[in-house]
Image (cartoon, rainbow, N blue to C red; front, top):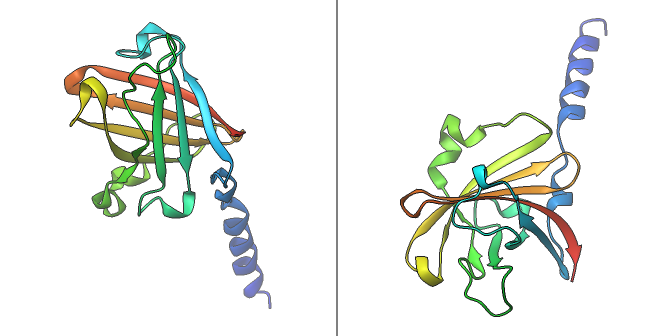
Length: 160
């Protein structure tokens, strides 16, 4: 029994450290919604007030967990850069150190996907980084280097 105690304590510590990420999944009638960060230094190709909506299922991160749609702030019905664009997993990341990358400051888990742009960027693929935050919010970075498109969106789950 004395030998088993350290093993049991270690196992319990590991289990306690595991994060339950299921709460980040959007259910029917829910969506993540938020605006681009309004700092020109981390915003290129997006205007202040541009919005992003994302559906997300954490159990499907390796199969296609959801979609993103952007909305320009200036006028209703204006063309979007992403319109229900699927988040496409990068399968090779599951076997690469980069797949487990981490940012500091309350991020529980980070994921990288590709997503096809529409509108003026039709046919281009963007890198989309999704960070699940310890406060329940989600941070999404959209990066498309050749077009100099970069934006950080802070999202919260809302009911439609």
